[in-house]
Length: 191
Image (cartoon, rainbow, N blue to C red; front, side, top):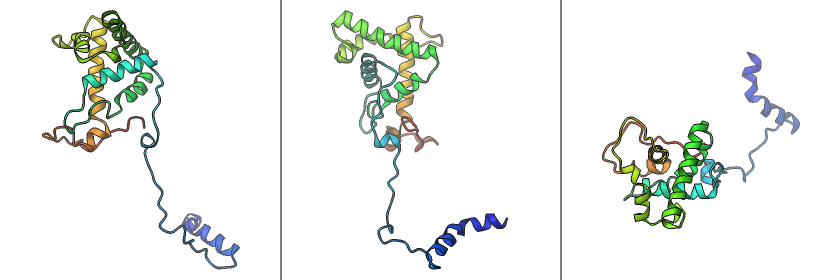
C-alpha cells in the first residue's frame, strides 16, 4: 500500500535529488501549450482499399443519387459514405462482398451497353433508367434479380451510413422536426 501511495510523487522526488534538492520548475515555453487532438479521419484522406477504381466511381455516383444533400442536410458524399462502405464491405462476409462487387459491375456493364459510358458518367435521366429496379414494389422477400438485390442493399446501407455520420449529426439530423434520443451520437467514418 505504501508503494502505491508513493508512486505519484516518486518522479518529483527523483528529480529533486538529481538537481540538488530543488524541485524542477516548469519552463515558460511549456506553460499554456495545448496539444491539438483530432480524429484520424479529420487529419488525413481515406484511401480506397476494397473496390477497384470503376466500382468505387460507380458507388460514389450511386451514393449521391440515393442520398443527395438537401437543404441543410448533408448527403452521402458530404458524409464520406462511399469511403466508409469501401471499408465496411471490405471487412464484411464473402457473400456481402460479392453482392457489392457484382452489383457495381452490373451497373457499369448495363450503363456501357445502353449509353456507352460508365455509370459514374451517366446523367440523371440515364441513371433513373438504370435504377428502375428500385421503383419496384417492396416485399419482405429479397428480389430474385441480383442487380435489384444489390440496389436494395445499397440503398439501405447508404441511408444508414449517412444518417449515422458526424456530418448528419452536426447538421441537426436533417429536418430537425423529430429528435430521437441518439441525436448527437455518431460514428466516425473509420474509427
